[in-house]
Image (cartoon, rainbow over all chains, first blue to last red; front, side):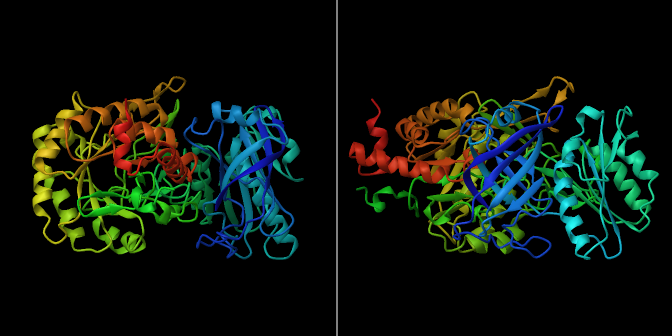
Length: 281
Length: 309
């Protein structure tokens, strides 16, 4: 992980109140290339694997006091040495994201990452079912692309992405890969109903492996289905964060065991069957 | 040029290589920040609180964004004394910076247990006694608001030091009291070697749309730039009420912020919340303090207070 000053390369609306922000990720200078931790798939812990995240300073130097965390929604390496272009999808929610929305290509950006633990690989022979609700679409876009590439190389089954939103205007259609199942509560696009409703009636043809990111009720619904189907469930959680590196314990997520996981360093990808989703609601 | 030796700050048997430390709770046990901060350039690491038994911490959400600050209600989440010694202390041992363990508990005996056990361990340079955490029912603030209790607890801890007599007892004060000088004097009478001030201020944020408090616990501790004037005023008052050294904290993000505390009477400072925005903040603070000393011809950090007109 590194904190660095970089440049915005693109910032555009992708749905009503949603934007995609892209920025340059400079090559590592090599001094702290490896923080000692390894991503699940064995890659260097400084690689932006799906499910991992970065934090952005969204305003003045110390106001807001808290950086804002965002999952990688895309990653395009270029030039070697860990450099490339990173992207996130964000929703305008408050003063931090309003600041980010105003950034233009060429503007300076203060980024810190990559952080956290990303998604694991699906079990052999399982169908990866990627479920996104609302702004949870960000990490699932990058995961869908990575798993599709793995599937093309014969490393796993082809993933299926389902995206849920209240209404069609909130779906970032332009970012979705072909074949995405779109679900809207009001039926204005795709399947009418929640993404959990869609999931309950969907036959993946193979034993499923669930991946999800979204609001707590959706995550709980996926947990119920994953438990019933005895499937793995990799859940990317969202929580306010302060340090982002596992130091402050501010981003606690309650587990069914009564313990707490740190979203930033134990997660953000946790075993969705172990999270106490009711406590998150 | 300021000789690095002149940046040192000695409290009892502990000499911090420079006056800028990282505040308890914000920096974990050091290891978490290793990739982002040169730990050996710091003056001191004040660890996350250690209690005798592990604590899971408070229900979530534990954080809220506030104007120029934040609220936290972590609830002293920590792995407990034994796990601290086994898993966290080895990383800290032998550091160039001082290692000050922040100690918390429900009872006086809890505090005593932590200090007595750690006295047996190498790698600890001092203790910061947390009698000011606003986030747990019995975890400190109940002690920290009563002068008689602060004096008694401090005396018991100071008297218990036999195996490691050089380690200072630093009592961390709460601003959530009517007269912080009264508590400070009680700690001094009890035998405190230094005082750190201030801990967080009690605060609350309500989500109007949801019509509920943002923090699961309702209230939390306010920190960040927003509280700096409160902290500076407390240090000014406390440093004139006691003769033991005062360590200032509360909203320090820049050298100017730190110099306000040092001019107000502190001999050292801690950077906390600013780490979350810029992990390099403490080292920027140190560079600025050093530059100030060179510019003003101040030989020692503790002489900075003499410059206040």
